[in-house]
Image (cartoon, rainbow, N blue to C red; front, top):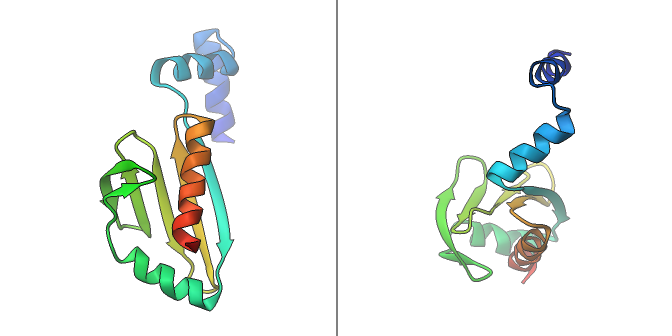
Length: 120
């Protein structure tokens, strides 16, 4: 409820629709495209991928890894500002992959690279 009231206040104070405010924000900082995927793993793939998660890759699909974060899974922040995070579930043989990129095309490449890293 509070979020809705804050949105109403933003429109009232600025005199600009939320859609226009969002367009202005994207014009200033650029767009971001998020994606959340879930992949079911066979026991063999899970074992292999668990071992892969222990290492810190220096690149992902040809882009240098700028930062590795292990707070909640393995998050690779890439030099172009995009990122991908792998989270293995402890209760079932599943890996969740969260990604974000500046364009839909880059997001598709990031998603394909993430899937290839898991299953290849």
